[in-house]
Length: 430
Ligand code: S3P
Image 1 (cartoon, rainbow, N blue to C red):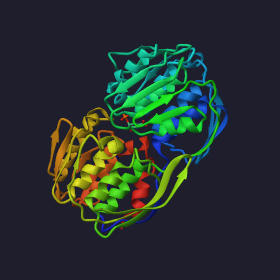
Image 2: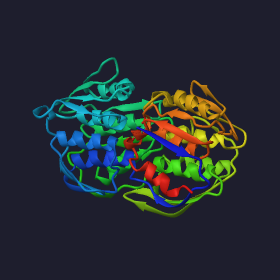
Image 3: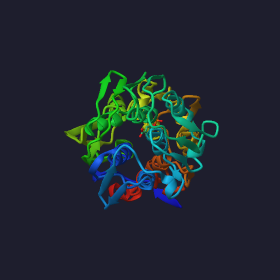
């Protein structure tokens, strides 16, 4: 599928974005492992989250849903062998499903295989295999890639693991495996990655202690079922924040967005660049901070972003690159080598498509240099999303300030994280 979009005069209105993807995955996983019935409200109904739902259904968990809520009848920490029905657990495009599930499967009483789509099948899995093997897990892979054959162990060994890389997926895989360990497991990282797992494990009654960038989880035999509400996804809100900031005369309110400090790097950076952005009505839902974001067109100054910022805005780098292209001065992004192993090589993909639009951008191994105040004056550009949802949405926002009509190929990949993206976008364009 392809979509055609045109330059707009302004964006305005009051909108909401769907539930947070990371938090939805975790809520399905922990509710499935809990004793009793959980409700997950405002969950993200998207392709990635459906992969996690299907995985747990395959392992004996009853999950019912309506448009806004999931009703999950947890089976306790030990799931049912999926071999009884169908051997593979298909993670599709979802790194979070594959990696977090590996931690859980390492502590089960059965063997399972995790597979994925073309993109996920070339993404690195050794990063979860290494710590899980240290915990005594039995995992076989195809040279550190999917498919993973995981032969569950009754008990795992508690470990103390230090990771130089900041990654919530690896941290979460280890913490989830830690539920099945023979003692407390500690995971430390140099820069703190998103902490939704730690927060939610505590909510489900698990003893988790956090000291700086170290987390210790104490094994348990029971998770307590919960009634949770998922905040709006800041990574989805980011596209509309960007639209409001770069399209002249814009004024937008985005309601109910999660602003967990381990996720809100883009807002921090925009404030430093001089953006007219305000967080109002700050509150907490299900132990996550939430607010309404009021954002207006702004004249921004370039900034340098390094490894100390990257983890709290890792998924927002594509849209940030577009914002940087509309700011005064040269922006440098470094320490973002992780972008090379996302759904696609996001550094290469951004640079190739931005150049087509007339943006002056240069790739580096771990980021890029972007020349500000780029005029997107090339008419009738045909852009490739490479089936990467975040790139497709970034290019859609770019088309709002590009000359003429812009065509985006494989535009339907937004279904991975934000199925209604184009409808919401249309509703704010003037
Ligand atoms: C995620 C963690 C991040 C992020 C991904 C979702 C998660 O990946 O990029 O979109 O839900 O834990 P890494 O852990 O690989 O940094």
